[in-house]
Amino acid sequence: MIETVVSIKPLLAVLASLLVTPILASSRSPNVREVWTFIAAGVKFLLVLSMLPTILKGTEIVYTVAEFIPGAAIKFRVDSLGMLFALVSSSLWIVTSVYSIGYMRSLKEHSQTRYFCFFAFALSATIGVAFSANLLTMYLFYEMLSLATYPLVTHHQDKEARSSGRKYLLYIMGTSIAFVLPAMLICYDLSGTLEFGRQGFLAGAGASKPLMAVLLVLLVFGFAKAAIMPLHSWLPAAMVAPTPVSALLHAVAVVKVGVFSVVRVITGVFGVDLLLSLNLNSIILFAASATILIGSFIALSQDNLKRLLAFSTIAQLSYIILGVGLLSPMGMTGGMLHIAMHAFGKITLFFCAGAIFVATGKKNISEMIGIGRRMPVTMAAFFIAALSITGVPPCGGFWSKWYLLLGSLEAHQMAIVVVLLFSSLLNAAYFMPIVYKAFFCRPEEAQFGNTVKEAPPFCVVPLVITAVISVILLIYPQPFLRLATMTVKNIMGM
Image (cartoon, rainbow, N blue to C red; front, side, top):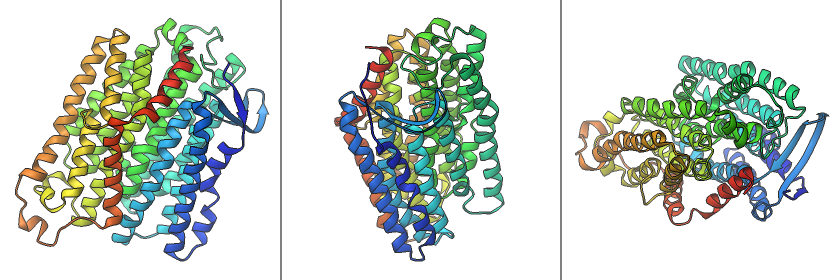
């Protein structure tokens, strides 16, 4: 048995950014609003960090807010997997807040108060998902995140933004209501609980294989923020949002909440032994592999940089699901480690795309020939992040890809080895030409003029920080690797 302690800290971490929204909404001064944003982000991160020593000792932190029926309470449980996700999202909120100031002020974006309010709201929902102790709590915060991010996706309030917003809600709320809710009711009827278990709370339910297969499909595809094909097209559509929204929400918060929820379903609802005994993980492996390959091929054909990054994200998210779906210790470690490695790499790429837009007004790759000579710092960070996403040293993304390959061999899944290696080649195929054209092709004066230079420091400093962290994670991956390893040991009973 894993020891648990009761503490209100998980609830405080969730509320830290939520409670500051009235102050943000009522503030008329941008400086005051931004100071309070940093205060909330700092408090949230420190609260998460304060729980880390307890988790690393092998103890879990629990806190029950309210219990409606037995086994279905509003309850938080901080374990090693939730801590990994919370550390990534809370730390990157601080960096993205700095970037947001530079981006929103440089472009003189409208409704900045609303933007920062809903950003804070979204981070509360993200931490709520990370620390959820059961399927009900996770579902409620998942939906809270959907509603909080809708105003961010539709921020520009033009026809394209409204259309994308409708698609966004249709996909991510339509699927959760139509798929997840019925599945939750069936799960509760079968087991009498929705509490995540180390061997899965459905392990002793005794249901038939067809019913278990239906429940798995409903829950995996119902959490559509994971962008598993064919429920993926909301993500490229949501690229109409301001770049800081794309950066945090589509590199960390929204999409990672989706894959995190799927990981919880695999490990906490079904469990490794049940999925292996019924051979249901083949459904997960097929869906994830198809998404990785198709998403990578589509990315190859994109000229708009943010759309390319969107399809790259679709493919990269499924690496996480694929790793956990292997149900081997190494594979699961690699999948969970990829939550962090991908986050730092992809947020850097989005920051770079935004910095280029701020400095040049350009969105298309074909318009960025020679831009590395005008914006060397931005494009150097882009190169580093691209290496991390591809899984090549000297960046931390190498470790998650390495563990995924070892896990595939461990599970005797040679087809998955081929998928991983081929998809990494595709990653290089759509990223490296951008870098080559940026640094080794001469810019046209008509394209950039003589005044183009790096974006303001508030835009450049954050992307440098995240790029440097991506390199550091190759040398020192231990914080995230240890949490991933602890999670796998608990799940496998090792």
